Image 1 (cartoon, rainbow, N blue to C red):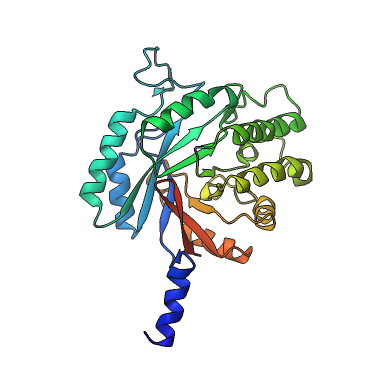
Image 2 (cartoon, rainbow, N blue to C red):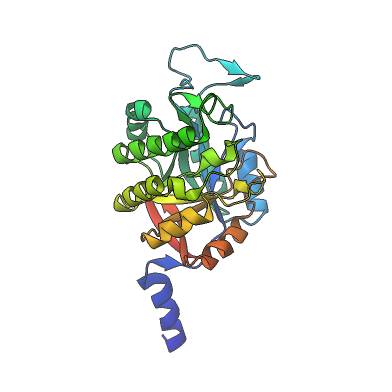
Amino acid sequence: MDEKQAIIFCKVYYTGRKKSVFADYHVHTEFSDDSVYPIEDVIRDAVGMGMEEICITDHVDYGIKEDWDSGEEILYRDGDPLANVDYPRYMEQIQKLKERWGEKIQIRTGMEFGIQRHTIPEFEALFRKYSFDFIILSIHQVEDKEFWTQDFQKGKPQDEYNLQYYKEMLAVVKKYKDYSVLGHMDLIARYDKAGAYPFAKIKPAVEEILKQVIADGKGIEVNTSFHRYGLRDTMPSADILKLYRELGGEILTIGSDSHKPEHLGMYIEETKKFLKDLGFRRFCTYEKMQPVFYDL
């Protein structure tokens, strides 16, 4: 081994990092209630754009949605079932796709858990039942009230719904540990019709959450959907990302939050450059709930 080869070996193997990879770690398919994107089309399209790794992360939101086999009536909204993933069929399909497409792309098994304090037991049971590579922990509702419909914000001043959102997140991460990263950490900003809420007002709560995440060996997601929503800042915001880095946070995943073909893989590479400019040097994929680090 010559000197140049030795340097490469040390960089890639000794430090536990690998050269960069084109991967999308937040992807929805027909198994989510808000997507009709056939799961095999997702994989085919990912291969077509040169993607090397993908994690399917379809929605589970106990509290507002039922399991298909729960015995409860499945309600519909605008023609879409308010139901969680059909777990047996989902796992079976992903396994078949791994066998069919495995030589062309690495496919990981994930889910997006939309957790609330009172739904933690259901998610603990679900995590024990199946084998996962990756879990996104998201706060999609508080007290079974959704943000995108404005049900949660209705009748509350901006201070109240923002601080209550982060209070719920802190309570969840203190108690629930079977996850990989926090998804779109400042999601409430996407649906805040009152405008941008000052970071200074949420910083104490955000800092406490990030300290808990780091202490637990978890990470945060950079969600590139802020581009298509026309947000002024990244998701999470540059302020949150800078604070995460200052606190010693290293685990980062990047996901498009794709629901349609035009979303898949979007702005992944641009986000890597942005993170590098902020001072981060690596990002992660996951295997069997363990992070795999890559250079940005």
